[in-house]
Amino acid sequence: MLEAAGVRVEPVGADIDERALEAEMADAEPSEIAQALAAAKASAVSQARPGALVLGGDSLVVCGGRRFDKPGSREEAAEHLRYFSGKAMHLHSAAALARDGRIVWIGSDAAALHVRELSEDFIAGYLDVEWPAVGQTVGVFRIEAMGVQLFDRIFGDHFTILGMPLLQVLGALREEGLLPS
Image 1 (cartoon, helix red, strand yellow):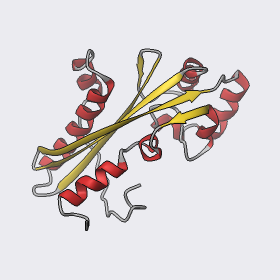
Image 2: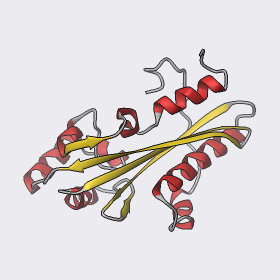
Image 3: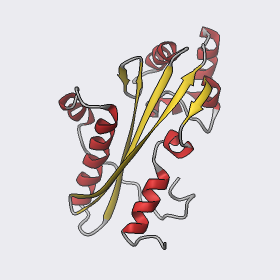
Image 4: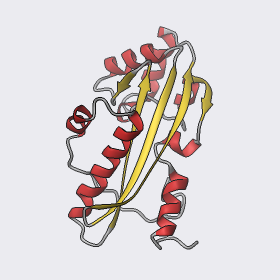
């Protein structure tokens, strides 16, 4: 998304224990957890890159009062899809900018995606095509691919659904002087 928007990026993985942070924040709102994860990633990477402005991001899904992580297996992905079937999935995406380990900006957004009733045949065929790629996504879908077929209604920003509140991020990068205003 960033490269398509004309922003040069260098992807770097963050070495943080996401599950531990989520466990510490078990009673927090989903948007707060997504923001904390994004901030932890940005902060961790920026400490190793003095002076650099580092973007961290995270997304999480809540459906029926349950928080979902990325599926660990195809079988778990199918279980998630069965659970989502006929329900509204709430996607919370967050981003944070850090410099020298200090958060200088944080933002988030949410979207509601209404999953249509999914048959076992659809779930199996969907995973035949989309697995293992959707194993790297918290909602078991890529909206830009066959995942769009999971839904009958979607409310929210397209970029948020892709995994980042991009318009907010671009505004923050302009504020930091990295993009022209």
